[in-house]
Image (tube, rainbow, N blue to C red; front, side, top):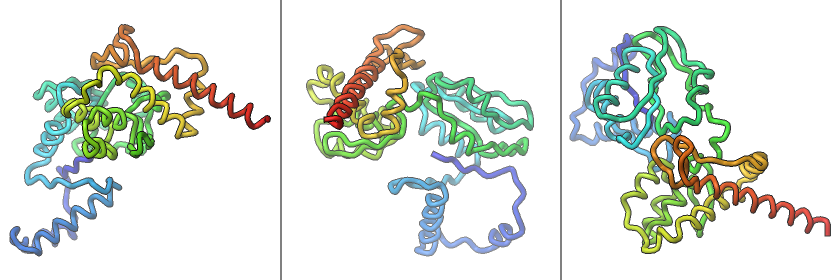
Length: 294
C-alpha cells in the first residue's frame, strides 16, 4: 500500500487555477468519471496489480496516515518506522496509540536515510516498513529506489519472498499464499489466494475453515510448496544450493517456535524443510548430470 498525503507545501500557479474551478456535484456522472480517471491514473502511476483499488480519503493527511496504520497493521505485526521529522514521529505516535509493536530509525534533522543504517535491521523479523516518501517537515526526500531495492542476503529463503510458483494446478504469487491456500476446503477459496501478497495470505489463512486433517498434513504440504518454489525457479535454486551444508534457521520475533526459532529456541520446521529441499535438489541435479553422460 502507498499512502499519498499532501502538505504542508506551496501550491503551484497551475494547481491554484484548477482549484478556482467549480467542483462537479458528486452525484453526477461527470464527478464519477473524474474520480474513475483519478483512480486509473493513480494505479498506473504506482504500477499496481490489476485488482488493486485506490482509496480517496476526505480528510487531512494525518487522517490518511491513521487510516493506513489502523487498516493494515495489528498487534501481531512488528513495524520499522523511519522517523526523520514531525511526520515520521506521527507514525510513531500512531503505532504507540494502537499498541502496535515497532522500532524506529531516528534520523538527525535534515539527514537522509542510508543503506548502512537499513542493514542494521536486516533479518530482525519486521513485518512492515513505514516511511514518508518526503519528510516535508524537514524537506528531506528519501531515496525510495534504495529502500525498494533493499533486501536481506537470505530474504529469498522466506515464504514471503515474491516468487511465482505452480502448485496443484494453480499459480501463486508466493510460497506463503500457496501454503495457506491448502488449508481451504473448497477450490474457490483456494483460488482466491493465488494473487495475494504473503502477509495478506497469512492473515487470511487464520480466518478460513480448515480441512479436517490439516495438522497431520501441514508439514508435507510445506515441503511440497517449498520444493515447488525452488525447483521451478532456477536462480533461487542455485542460491539455495550455494548455501552448501549450512544449517538454515527460520528466525523470527513474533513468537513462532513451530516453524522457526525465537532467541535460539524452537522446532525450526521450516528451516529443516529448506535443508531437505536443498538435499533433494542436489540429488536431482546429480541424477540429471549422470543421465546426460549416458
